[in-house]
Structure formats: structure tokens, C-alpha cells
Image (cartoon, rainbow, N blue to C red):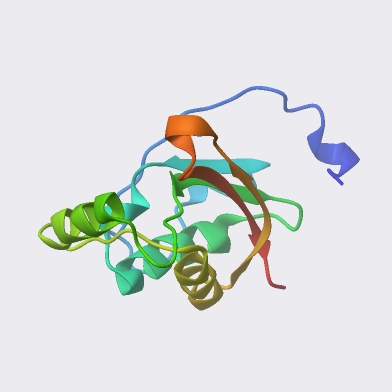
Length: 135
């Protein structure tokens, strides 16, 4: 449920920040948003760096904030396409993740999954992972 004090803010604002500039310190300009949406970015980073990015966002969240992550959730065992993409991402320092991998990354960031919406057809691996703070 969204708190009544925040319902009046019905606009969307784009912002950017440097993931690692301030360590684990949230940037004040984006604290307390209702929703944080990060799309097709986290697969570029290792589990440790991905957790650090998410920990920064988690530190900026209000009690009723959510983080929406649009990324692929890969099958277990991996199909040939998944294996190829995982090797490709490894050359950049990133990786493709299964749902269990996402759960661990989010756990390390102080977040839990509250919902998953998956695509269909050719987009069946694409998902939006909804996260909330553990506290």
C-alpha cells in the first residue's frame, strides 16, 4: 500500500547516478521514490558489484518503495543460447542469472523478491523482478 502522503506525486522523473562514486552512500536527489526502475543494466556486473548497486538503491528507498529490475531470468539447466550469452557477458565482467542467482544477489543487498512477471514467446526469459526491502 502506498502512503497517502506520497500519492500527490504522480510524475515520473528520470535520473542517473554513478553507481560507485559514493560507495554505499545513497545520493540524496533520489531518496524516497515510489518506484526505482533499472533496465538491462545489472547483467553487466558481477554478483558483488550488482549487490553493491542494489544496496545503494535500497538505502535510498522509503518504507513503501519498490525496485523493478528488468532483466533476463535464465533457465536451469541452461540452454545453448543461455550458455553462449553467459560466456559473452563474462568477457565484460557480468553474467546471466537464474532466479536463484537473483535471489542471492538481492539478499546480499538487503532486498527480497515480492513478485516476478515473465514474458512469453521469444521474450520468455525476459522478466520484471519486483523487490522490496527486507526491513
